[in-house]
Length: 315
Image (cartoon, rainbow, N blue to C red):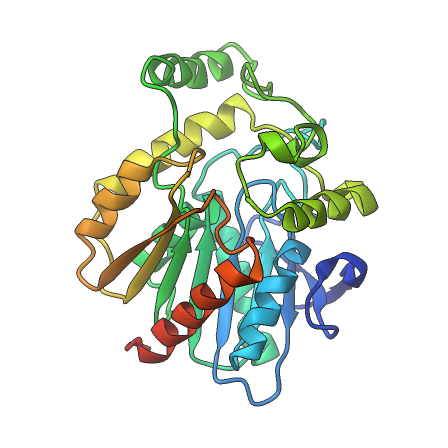
């Protein structure tokens, strides 16, 4: 597999200074960007699976937290976001043809990890949409010693009266050739650029919110707006499918914010209640991105994750 250098925006990553990125081709030819933060004498590597709309540099602070605890990190721009191939004529609409396509990106990431000889064992940190991708990957033999999920998208939060219409539109609009369009209530602008801190669902820390905003101001090519109808259809299908499958026998630690309003919290608790080697921790107060709060909140969480990884048993 041939790797080539890809852009890595150190000016916005707020992470270790030696972060680098590579282009790699997924199995279907899509160009995917993979980044990593090397660490000499690391005792393992954390695979970071970002959420929808996110990008590698957003996890620079997370990589720093892991580096402080002796772990290297690798992250990915999923197809359709970050600098990886966008899939529609309008690059600001989030899209995927099938959720299982993301597993091709996972496979590409693993090939990069192997080719670069990143330190073993491997661990997984997966957030939001990355939590759905990571759950399937773990079920299908990802080869990590332990997993941590943050606000995993094992269901999408919707008001009960909205859900039937969302499911119906997710099927009807693609059937009439409109699957590439945005559902009602969504927009092409990234929410941190237009909604403001007071209305955000991500973090309670204004400094962290400003970092998110400034990253997109500095590099608007990283921005992504709402999802397409096809993405919505595929996400609902994937979360329903995963809900019917048993959890893998891997130690799992899951965090969920006490004020989570983006993913389906009952779906998280249902999954974790049946995870043989799983623990759930509610972060109070906490929004969707509990690992992007103030240092007073996140420091103990990263200590907890590092301890969880160090005690995990597996490959």
